[in-house]
Length: 179
Image (cartoon, rainbow, N blue to C red):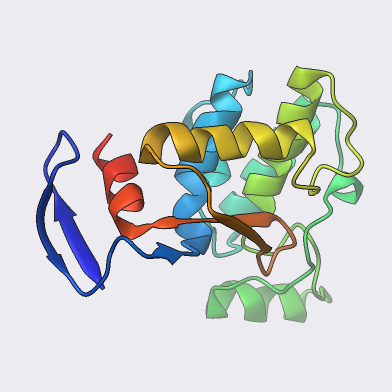
């Protein structure tokens, strides 16, 4: 399935059934980040980039995630995402050689999770339970997806990192990126 939209979101060409719901997984990250920014998340530059994308676990990625946490008075212990090794092969080898194992920091979604924690702080919401779909942080992230896609989320699952993953259509996803 595929779809091509113009800048105003009109479908130019489609293949298959792009209006069917899909779980975009990490492709939702920029949309979630937009929702968190709308809710008061105050990040810029590399910190916002690591909130809106997966990372490969290289040292500069980990340093950026640590800075997002530290700037909010948080630590790696506050992260509730699934532990994993760095994604990039060279970063993974270096991490293991240094005696490291799977951690929440080195998992490729830790930037998004650090941003979720910072959003909880901005909202005055509890840090614990931030992965619950009804938590104010997840409602803010979902609002970003819905605003940019122009669609209602039709289903919610759990992504590999433990965060909710929202189902929208490829048309909605394309419109979101067009916007």
